[in-house]
Image (cartoon, rainbow, N blue to C red; front, side):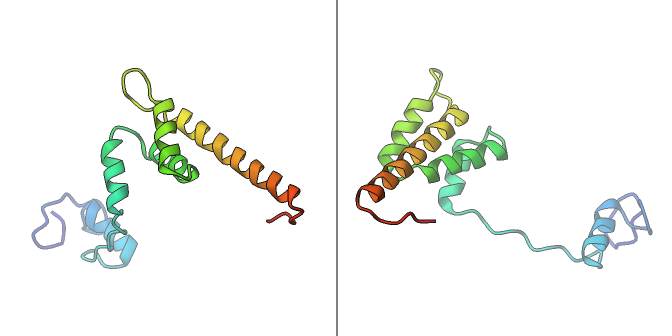
Length: 122
């Protein structure tokens, strides 16, 4: 049994179970646990709940698409355009729409800057 009182785990190394051995390696103390990371905001938690079947990578792409779309109306239109007939969301298509909109917006801003003789921004 593991050397830690109350733990019934099978010893793996140094008389400790796998859990306590990894804690020993990470922190130097088999009883010390690390603090949990920051909690997501309520908005991110709600979005994650809506898209609970998608991977972390797909969810990150979804969040990026929403950040690229400036207004709520643009987001609604893009989500509607990227929705499949069965109601699921095509995240790749949503990201493509958002990136296209961001590029168009940047080009329009650059064109306006040229017309008013403003110098380019970095």
